[in-house]
Length: 299
Image (tube, rainbow, N blue to C red; front, side, top):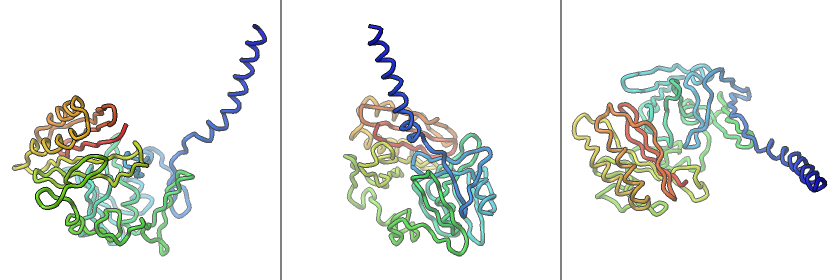
């Protein structure tokens, strides 16, 4: 019996030493940001990858590292970034932004976290004329400025209807969308929907692909909040509920919509809340004077 116990003990020790190298190599690397080959250090607020797989950096980085002038309008929750004749305006929690007089759209948004303002690094840097490259092996963002810097190629730079394109055109983008009463519905992962509803509900499928698994949203439902009069949140909620009930189980859909309908006015807040059924997880959030966002993910 003693020999058997000793054998098990020695086997455990051996397994520990075999597993350690693998565990070490699997450890997550720290996110690095490099500007023209030099690593940028963040003494307090750290950059991170958001739920849309975009790198967010504290806006202070933009002013100090890229030499831009940064402004803030508290009433409208707008971040203004100016550099070499280019003016970029981002609104907290909104995907639409402006570069000079052009309205563009990104697949994430500027946000506040721990009382700090964060902005999407790629969209801001490229708007200011820098080149951005992601080195996945080293978990590093490489930014290049100066004469050799050009906007990073996304593979479809000439598609004006693609928000990631350098030639993105908002009007062309809207003309290509599925609009209730004007075009056919779209489908994604078994959901059938319009991208724009008469109620004002906005739906984005985030170009989901099966290989993304649960690392990206299947779609985002945006219940816009902003018009002082004529902004019927209940109509938007009804349209959003119709989409959810196509695939999400009834009990979970009931819970989600009960929470969504707690927001009656722009001043009401809905802290981020997670709902789950056997297949999906639903994230709901709405900040003060901001839209209601419903995200649908696979578990």
